[in-house]
Length: 171
Image (tube, rainbow, N blue to C red; front, side, top):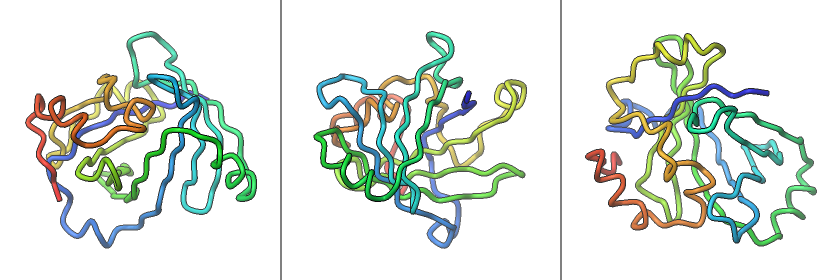
């Protein structure tokens, strides 16, 4: 499967966002020793999976080849005992101009980071999409913001890079 996506830093959260449908997401990246691990164990609400992502074309993080294996809760529980780099967030679903925005509010060590993702079915949709006013900057191609790069980090570790975009914690 090819995933077409754009990622933005949040400038502020849409009014009433805390009432939006949401779910807890836990990602554990492997191998722990990798600078940018690409193997992800995920608890996505009540779904569990193992995913490997890789760019379709070098230098274009908006097109990702995604291979996913569905897991049972017990398989997730057992695999989550392996040492990896962990990221926790709450994902909110927001309707924006006929599109579904996934607003990720990070918890734990990355508390203060809020990212907004949009997925697309065609390259034309992705390329013509205009950034919403509640977003600050398009960070789709910023390597430091990739899930595999964020895992195991603290907000303080990325604060200077976020500052280059004028990012301030929106909560």
